[in-house]
Image (cartoon, rainbow, N blue to C red; front, side, top):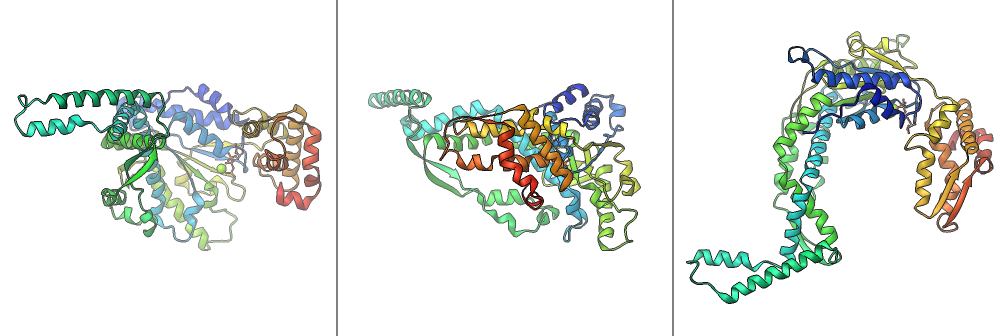
Length: 466
Ligand SMILES: Nc1ncnc2c1ncn2[C@@H]1O[C@H](COP(=O)(O)OP(=O)(O)OP(=O)(O)O)[C@@H](O)[C@H]1O
Ligand SMILES: [Mg+2]
């Protein structure tokens, strides 16, 4: 069984630092919450069930890293993670029980996660089986037929020397081909294999979650309907191997225990990120109980049992939500956390405010994280043989422009960096590789100015483009 990685709070913060600039408080809180879950799992049994996770409310303007922090946290913990928009549950057509769909989706995700891990573990065994299957297709074994025939009649005395040498010959040829396969000499050769045909998109016939709520296992139903549907395909060995590997790995894992493990993991380690939770809060200054407000409260009431701890029926089994970690997030510009119904407020005891990002933060975000945008563009152009480098001053200039446009047009936080970078590179990305297919390009302040100056100066343009 794969254990939750036991990072200490400080290790967690250090890991998050690799991707998220600033927001120390938020990182600290999520690190503690995650570690607390490990602490709970390792606590004395009598008290274990009593300890509830410390759900967190991340409060802050748009584009400052709320989602990013939660996503990175889940990755670190190797925990099942799902992000839902709270506001979607207020849309027409979503009623009541649909809030539970987040748990069902999380469970589906966990099952896939566990199965993938299990398949990874049986990879070698599966590869052996696949090698034999491919060999069977290339050089069908005579031995099997021979044995079958022999055992039907009396055996040892009708020993057939010609058949024996056939067998030997066959065996030798197989071994020769095994060598060739292993040396990659046969990758391009086409073989015919039987593959399960892809599932038909029949799901779409049913409404969201409709069948599931009736307790029917749609996937299984479709699965068994589709079972007979094997089709023959001619493929190069390199591709056939991929398909067969999937099939063999699937055969080797124990689905029942995969599901059990997944259920356990969801219940002990699951993280649900509820975005835009402020959108279901009722602003106290609001114009009374109009339609949408009522439904907002309704969503909060539906959410409450799940966050408080209840059981949800999923197609894989029952999931207890008591120890799932919920991270709520929102800007809370119009409404405040205190506008949520008291019971729900109580379930998000840790409140962290994320700060707006400064020009200095933008500079760091552009250059420091492992996945920094400058590194992404470098990597993309590298594939075309073009090497780009940014001067420090150019990055400073980009940060300055981002801050300026945020101040003048709309503050969308670090998301501004994405639009600015894509404008900056628009021309180059179109020119490569047709006009430019090698060499080095230095992105300096002049280059930045040339690409962006007109956009920044023209308010209308920056409205639409930056
Ligand atoms: N502090 C930060 N460090 C590094 N990158 C950041 C930071 N804040 C935001 N980003 C980048 O900006 C983008 C948007 O961030 P994110 O999705 O976390 O915003 P958010 O706070 O969840 O906003 P919203 O309230 O609109 O959902 C992401 O690509 C993210 O990588
Ligand atoms: Mg977000």
